[in-house]
Length: 64
Image 1 (spheres, helix red, strand yellow):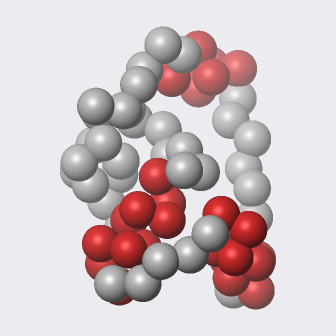
Image 2 (image 1 turned 180 degrees about the vertical axis):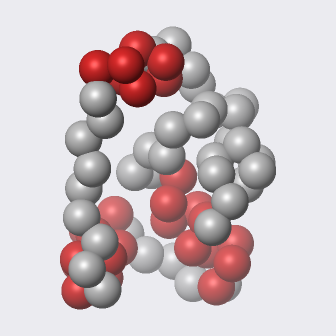
């Protein structure tokens, strides 16, 4: 999967709220954040906490 910028987002960090939008664009279905969270956990994905350096590089970036 390409990064956020390649997917049309201005930031370089994936944000939880952007993932349902990507799923909707690619698959034509809509999920709530809770439903998508369950689905992702079922296939083995987990939340990743960014390092302090990544947090600093993403600070102040907003989606356009």
